[in-house]
Length: 326
Image 1 (tube, rainbow, N blue to C red):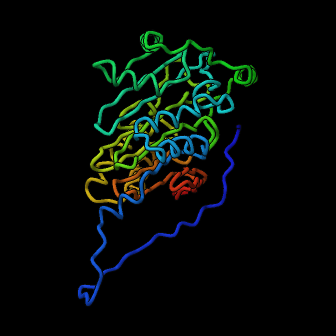
Image 2: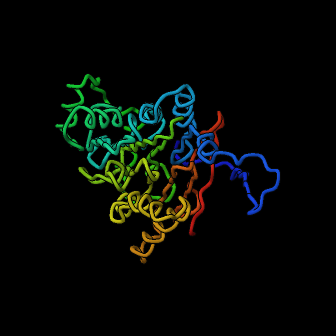
Image 3: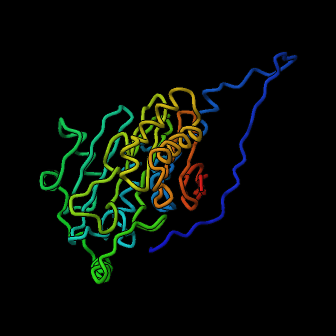
């Protein structure tokens, strides 16, 4: 997959219920909480990763909790060697190292993360082990790899033949210029709400293609690549990690929703702040957010045209083009 293929924007029809201030011979008013719960379970994820959203969505439909579903969902892309931005087969750094970053959050607000993971493709699962089996939030480099092996993860070679061939081609010119909406931006970030209304999220990536050795982006950073509050909602990011980290964008979106903004309004505000902070360069990169609140309302916004997200709900997978500034 060298370039994203987008389908046309899906037309979504909402259902509005209006009540008069004076009700004559009316049936009992429907229970709002029941209407809300009928929306669940639901899965959303950055970019058009239908196999990942389907996996998570089907697990939720079978009664899985949000944390298990989101972990299993992103694992689909971590194992797909055709995806050069996540997991095994990811593009290397400039020195030929394939390194993975990931984080995960549970409905309780607990979190785990790994950075510069080199020997297992299951980065989000290792992050979950950090969350559940250690007193820490993040492990890095050799320590993260050693921990993964101690936890029973198989040692893998992440540098595939396809990625090696692309790397050898890159070495001929050694040009580094991230291209808007091309594979080197395609982190998968996923949010799931289960049948009980509980929210969990995960974010996993191999980072920018041909990055400087040691570079870490927003994907494993709680509050940047991912943030959630089970009383409010959650958000995940994709795009130029440096810009997203400096804005603490996912945390910002959840806080804006806490203040009463819709997920859509919150995503738009987060992108506008990135644009304002980068007045001379924002047209040279992509940044995008998706968000969901506890009502099941969804929002998405990005800088440049071309970003999409996938939603799985009621046994239906939809790829939805995001709103954008330019």
